[in-house]
Length: 125
Image (cartoon, rainbow, N blue to C red; front, side, top):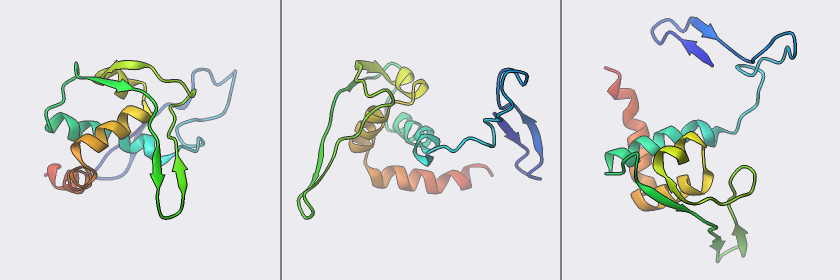
């Protein structure tokens, strides 16, 4: 966890592990993360504004995207490469389920999420 004061940029708190004696690796700043997981909360917030609730059920099942121009096929996966079937919105967010995030994006629209993300900066005022 990294807590930064928005006005000054000063680090207020940083926790990067469980036990420094066991591992000196500081996950708060040494880990390399894919940016997609950091953006998922934006997708879920936009979905809440579009009428989703914490109790909305989304089916976590395989999906396939085919590009007819290049014959490329994309089969997105969850971490652990499992599918979990009917899943509550709140659990999907907490577990960072990739497939459900993609299905939410498809449902509410990518353009809506892009506009929603762009407007976040103006919400701080």
